[in-house]
Image 1 (cartoon, rainbow, N blue to C red):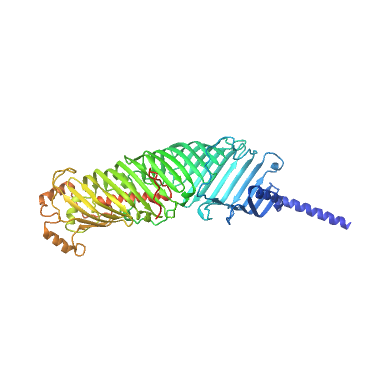
Image 2: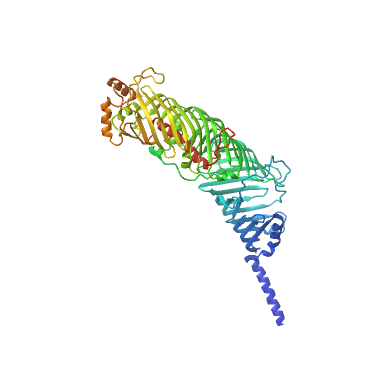
Length: 639
């Protein structure tokens, strides 16, 4: 009798434990061991799980904690994929039916390490042909809800160094009956927020070349002006994914084209897109200026490192055309670019580029294969309006006219300051039939004869008309040298020579201004009035000191000006008659010239603004793909 009672009590305990296990859960290691052994043998991955639990009621649920997946062929100390926890639930009918239904899959804080390949070892896949299956036929199943919370993707080099990361990865979605996919993915790349919405229809029978219709929305606030929405047909075979019949819009601006990604080895991206209008970065209306203070042209170049190392880990072929293209403060209409990225060398050539009413040809190049990247820009521009260009690139609103610009420059460095301080090459510019606004050069020249000027002496109503203003610069180690600056106007002639330190944004020029007794510009027959003393321009780009180049001028200005007047009737010598001076003042514009401004003007200021614009282009190389001149030569190696 006693033995029967013990047996009954034991049986009741087992039943109670089993019933509790249905709701509370039991360890699931005995179920997972065969699966993990198969993964290790067949796939070459070792999976470790710190803890597991299986619950049958109210719905069959398995929970895994401390998950790590390690590639057995890798020598990396960290696992390829790790996660804090994973929970998956299915319906009870799934255990006895042939159509699986997953009610939820939740992954918490996963970390994935994506290896970066610097050199391709296999030939790229040429086409995505039907019949070559990537993922074979799949059983029909549904997922009511799947989610990833707090994920991280680390891009890791061969030396096990983390090159870049995607943080705060969040994925929420579902796979409904019939293969209807609905998912939202968001992430943070450094300071840039990214968000992708996908809606598609998975093909029955697997991804064996059949097209997957896909609707997408891509949002990158601050990078794209508005959400990018569109549709495409996705085909996946082997390691090649093609996006055919891409049609979409950014705000109200349409685009179309195609793209392909080969991930068999080092990723190879091919893109061909045609836009009605494309805006990248913070765009202002043309000619609006930056809103920065007038002396912003004197702001030091940035020492912030420009990191382009990631360009070594992807190859690309890009053809981009747009009826209108705006990048930050630059405006182009139209634009056609052919660009390649191959083993860390970027080349981009402009087959067509309209810029501020003119036409440009040329391109950019960058070599980021070495620790110190090198850059090159070669560009020829003709018929361009100078005022909107200089306003947009440097908030420089002083010079207007038709600009011809020829640039052939190279540089090295890991920051904007280093790049500007290493410039080598040539730059020449010519502005025709224009004006220097807010500056009366004739009046300024007369004032130099009686005082040392600080700044360019800009006023609000004055101006200097000219028929030709230009010069050529030779760059060496960030120093720009010229001996042929020239300004020809109805009442003034200015020639000059000197240098500019591009890295320090300083000037050291000697100008020889001459007043003439004629309203004719270039080709005028009138002789200039005599000029006894050249003018020195020294100091910062925006606020230089301007004074007669006379011994002891800066040491004892009063004595120097007294000596200057003893030699003649002022700066312009004995031939400067009062009648001529009166004519010059009236034609060139009157008014007080004592007002000062930090806005640059004149030959040195104009060249400074052009260099400022080139600096702004190079500053953005770290977020925009650099390009290259149309030649096939390789940019210089880093110094």
